[in-house]
Length: 274
Image (cartoon, rainbow, N blue to C red; front, side, top):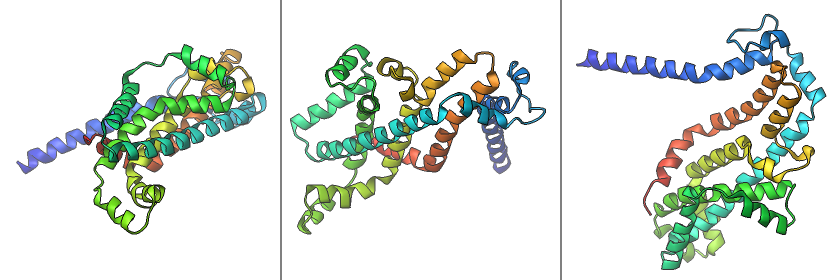
């Protein structure tokens, strides 16, 4: 039995490694092509460059204002994470601790946002009324609204599993509502907080369509939208396009690598029924 179990374990490991390699092949193709000449990159083959062309990265930065686009993506993603995380955490704390009919209705109302499709027409009309069209603030608020339902879902499940006796002890010690949340409850939410930070950051960073509806100025476009504009300008220069794609993918990989160990814990906690 032991030999059979070890054999099955080895087969599973080989299969998982094989799947991992298949997943990484497209990424490696992009990295290899970003270091090739224009002629080598046209075929988009999975092969090493004859001579690594690190100058491709410098030439892209010289021809396109990629630094501004990168900064725009950082600002949009970071502030989307801050707004959605803080707002959803506070909202979830109130909803999880006050189980009145109104608060249950509000929780179910937020959950509708998980399945309801986004209608850009009313969203654009609201942004126009608030004079937030073609602004980073408008895009940040729109992204924050889109990710808030799922963020509340995760926080609500986690907070519901925290014993209420902690609240009572903190109140006896003189904590107010905000002090109770920030000093007692929020430090316990580290796994789910890291999860929502990673997921919300990836959602804001990777989105391609929404900026086309909201942004008109080229100097306010994020990285993903810049790829489309850059491809239209250099559609035969796949080595330059690959450079931009590498610059988009690397920050996501870094963020995910830093917090990946918390994702399973946070997602599992969010599945707890409140």
